[in-house]
Amino acid sequence: MVALARSTVMPSPSDETSEFAVDVLKGLSATRKRVSPKYFYDAVGSQLFDQITEQPEYYPTRCEMRILQDNAADIVKLIPEGAALVEFGSGSNKKARILLKSAPHLAAYVPVDICGEMVEQEAAELRPDFPGLNIHPVTADFTQEFELPEEARNAPARIGLFPGSTIGNFEPHEAAAFLRNAAKILGPNSKLIIGADLVKPAEVLNAAYNDAAGVTARFNLNVLVRMNRELGATFDLDTFEHHAFFNRERNRIEMHLASLKRQKVKVAGECFEFRAGETIHTESSYKYSVESLGALARGVGWAPSGVWMDEDKYFSIQAFTLTEAGSPKP
Image (cartoon, rainbow, N blue to C red; front, side):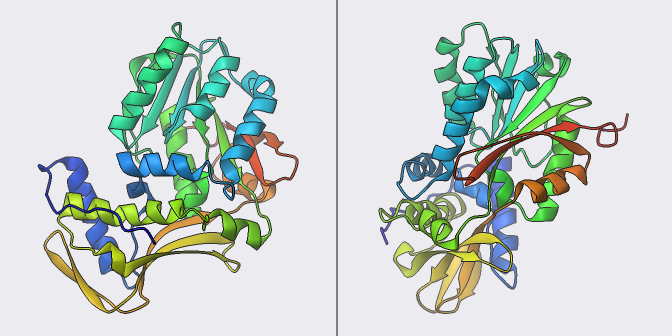
């Protein structure tokens, strides 16, 4: 385990900090302690995740990039003239860039991410390469309703992009809620392009989340660094350890931070006790089949309209069209 620096300096109050505090205190008070994976992605966490995608064991990003590169011309046939592309949880622009190059008929691109600093930076990097495209970054929690920029609202169609298998980080009922929320944001006749990790041998999955270089461990531990910095927490990173494993019964990878000893930690003025071996559940990553994701989407009004996979069938990009039944009611 690599120990990370920590700070106990509290920032000035903000709505984002308050939400972080509320969610963390609720999660650490639960019988099984947990923290939402959306809090991984501060500036440092986003950079660490980019490093994870470059590790030899981590196949999802390479597979998804290859699928996009090989099938972009086919995928963008789903995008009507003058449409707006809305990317949920945009992070790095590498994947969107592939589609943008193949879709000069797009009128606008709206990257949406909870990390405002990163989404603005990524948008600034894109503009010189796509001078004819209007790029409108939005800082928002994409699991909640947010307002699209006027140009996207007025576009003849809105196409959602949700790459990276982030859909797998949701519990199934949360994934359904996201799909309903996306329907509200994108509106009638919209389409949604989703990257989804597929079911595969457990040894491949376990290696992907336990890279030899320890980048995923640092990424996981960084959420404690963030709590120390933003919530005045007192986590000693040398007393917590990254654990990741495939849960066969629930068909998901689980990531945890395990306490190496009995200890007490203060967070936002409250004290929490940890037993030796007790964990904070920081992430689940569900693995889908094409059929299971299609069934989930159909249940909330999205009809499957396209599937693309790599040759090993490790990863998929799946497209869905919002049906009349799924369209938001006026």
